[in-house]
Image (tube, rainbow, N blue to C red):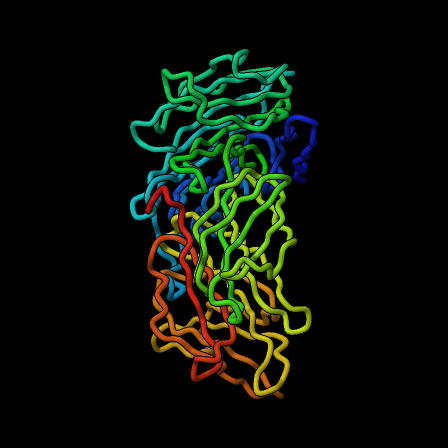
Length: 454
């Protein structure tokens, strides 16, 4: 059974307790494990096959289940499902399972031609010690110095423990159990480019820390993914990293609006922004903020809506009208990863009426050429009014239908052909009323992607 990850808030730092634990099938003598870590930045959900049997899969920045096998040689393959639900093989190779060792397959680089490297990670360590290693998949010609600080956690007292180059051999260090802060610099430099939260590392365990691009709000930022014997990773973020927020007003009564973010005595105004248009990003420290929206003459429309922003998080504050309660703000979390083979679409439903009737919910269906609504696999079913749901669609062009059921009859509220989801990144799709449209409704599509790859 997996042991949870405990997070303890202290007065000056976040301390994360990381407990290594067993995943997958129960182990026996003379057996080991096979596991996949997906570090391919633009990959779809990737499935691990062992001896032609599909075992589990993972998205970018995560791991599959850890699968237990007797010591022997096994044929593995990595596959994904395309738009036609066909399995496409990316890589094939043979893995030799060793006793009490996890064969950790690390996939990185462009998914069109991913690199697969195999790391042998002991499942346990010496008594009273833990194994700690760093694997650099941040990019060619990029190397780091890694410093480890305990006690006061300051960089000035940190010890240089390793200098991982791109796709370096995994060098596991044996260290004591305890609280640590991790610092990274460019190799040979002392300028800190990454500082972790304080983490607690347990003895009798192995930790592999994947150094990869963060693909978040920081230009050329990095993240550390901690891989243990768990079936998931813990991501460490740079403690000095900022977040960002932008806004969109869908309320037709106001053609231009300005948004102001306030914390204490500090205020951060946006530029004047046209209706149904996204404002520029405001870069902010991770915190909770009060949000105001004013019209083009400076009069308050709302002035006290709450928005919370996490480190390296990108949010959208979306203003709309609730027909019962007036102006409201919905917070959307943007996914900035440069996905190429599939895309996360956040669908926002602002529809509340049809022909004088209240709309409780709608279905949104993405259909390929020659595909019926009933056959389509890419859909969001029953998305409530004034709510958001996410769906993953393939890298294709779709005709998108918004459907409402009226006494057993399906009504097409709107449809849009040639909706293109073939660019890197992810998307926000807003459904709203539009008096200027012949249908009375409209769809607005926005792409979200880190500026690091733009």
